[in-house]
Image (cartoon, rainbow, N blue to C red; front, side):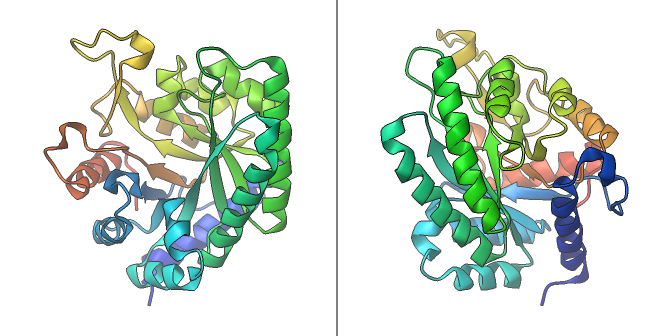
Length: 306
């Protein structure tokens, strides 16, 4: 049975999800819990979801983000994954559902795929579905492409909303929302009723933005974020600075993570916030060891709780 800390986590997460759909003028009426609740992303384990679930739970986290590979494995038996997560005291905070782009020939494919994933999320007990976008090669997206992608996100988000699952757009290097103004442009091209923002603070930094400022700029669309750090340009790397970077454990890069937390508290953000590390830098340690370092920084330096 889930312990009391997990039950409290789930109550807070549910209240936060409900409150985030209200106009900001009405949110003050919603009882507040702890400002930010933490989860951890399984991406570091490179598809070894069983190990990720075990390790993340053993470190004391109560929430997890999984990727679309989980649908390939548990898609016909979501109740099995739900049971595993419940036994480990974990909630599915978000599913990384994959890509979208502005190619009209792929529109129906994207709608069908992400709607299918939303049904899976709901069956597992979650309520957030993440998408990223694929940027045209070697050029910026055109205004027409931003509009088409915004319309596609609206269509997907309307369908997922009907299922009780919130669609969030993840800003990302090599995506439509790479530079700060591009993130804003895509949000403007989409409907706030159906599309929210997953702010990845490391991708935002590498894309040329200030993640602290982004929290305030996008406070009305911000549903969830990735706590993440990045360093670059890398020594000896001959690539342009924009392409020369590495994601690292919290506190070991250039992101003002404490400043982000301060900004989140200033807008009464109620989470969830998911710590993410794509892979262990250098490969000398295990994903669990890196996660333990991230947990330590989040709790001891940032003052967050699990």
